[in-house]
Length: 225
Image 1 (spheres, helix red, strand yellow):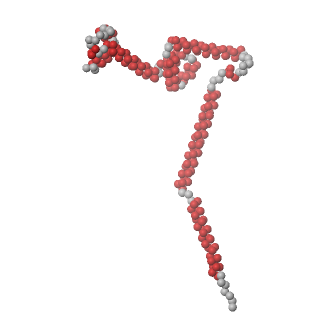
Image 2: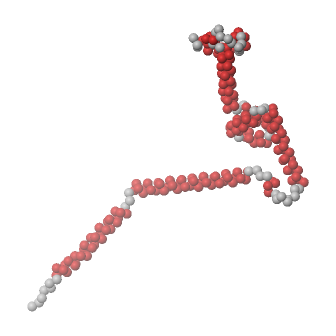
Image 3: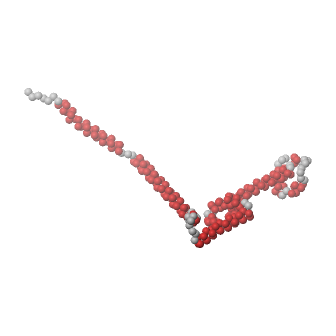
């Protein structure tokens, strides 16, 4: 008798195993493809952000380069004293000595002229220091003109004719007028003080008052009724 194989079922299961493996591989491949697929909007957004960052970086680099160029230009334009580069035991030539003495004389004359301006106009330093910077800011060319000419009269004139100076003078004059009127009013008294002893004759005070003060006093007295 021939014996039939007993493990035919096991062989069928083993033969089916490769089919399941292929199916699993297909599922895995599809999942990887889905994972690799990125929405178009997300790609465009990321690309835009990257471009913006690159533009900002380029602007920053250009700004830094501009600042460095300005600093270099300012350092080159900054005036230097020729004597600073010389050693203590260096010998001056006749030409260098004349140039140095001329420079010292110009500085001395400039100081003398400024002292004369202070004597002539006691408020010179205050006016120039407070109001001239505004004028030079509005007209930068005037700075080089004043530096070359050393014209202190012009500097004082420009400062006193600035808009800020005129405005401050008007405000100060109003305050002084108001204070003077108040003092005159207190000296003259009001209707309630009639009959009281006064240090000055009332008629004389009225006569000495100017028109503005007199009108102010009348208005003040009218308001006391």
